[in-house]
Length: 143
Image 1 (cartoon, helix red, strand yellow):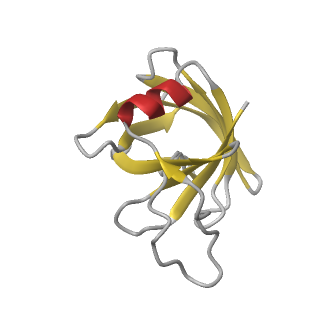
Image 2 (image 1 turned 180 degrees about the vertical axis):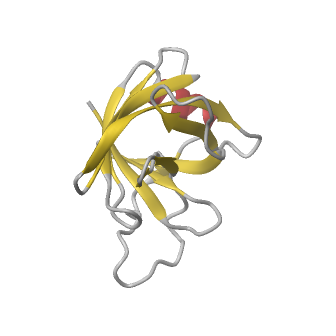
């Protein structure tokens, strides 16, 4: 899933992009066999599920996510080096079948900026990719 700032550390909750995208040499790449999901497929995949995630191409943070059964809210934990915490967020979708969310530290009043990503699935891995930068932001595993 994608970026949100919690205190000193940044946690990402992301989504994925097309297998034909160009990636930098050291970046984790989206497998050619990954399939892009539409809104209904993303909702079916994530609704009521727990995931573990990591951000291999960005801040190197890891964490967990629990998504509500109606896929409108989520919460979880994050770890980035020695920093860690809990977060919560709101989920929406845009007209481009992008998975969008805003997150905040648990108990904080303000949400961070909305992030919208594409979601791809390949086997047990779910890739969240920024449609503008074309980076794999998060690799999620459904529990």
